[in-house]
Amino acid sequence: MATQAEFQTIKQNFISAGVDEKIRIYTTTEGLSVDQFKELLREFPLQHLEKLEKAMAS
Image 1 (spheres, one colour):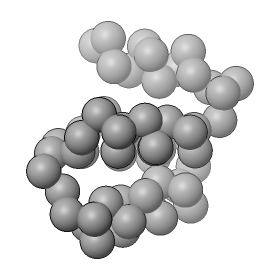
Image 2 (tube, one colour):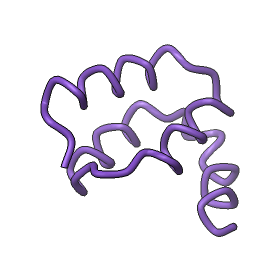
Image 3 (cartoon, rainbow, N blue to C red):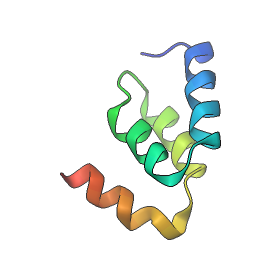
Image 4 (tube, rainbow, N blue to C red):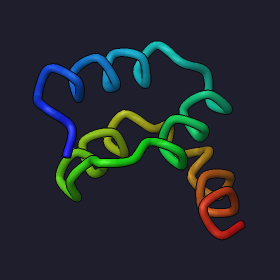
């Protein structure tokens, strides 16, 4: 599981990333808790949610 400091770094990178990079971070980062994934998802642009869903399904 990621420490709080590690998660904050991941979250800051996620917030400043473009959509494709957000998807890469979300789908390849390991060791996060369900709550941490939910927190990242709150920062994801909803209009691109379908693109994230497709990436997660493949």
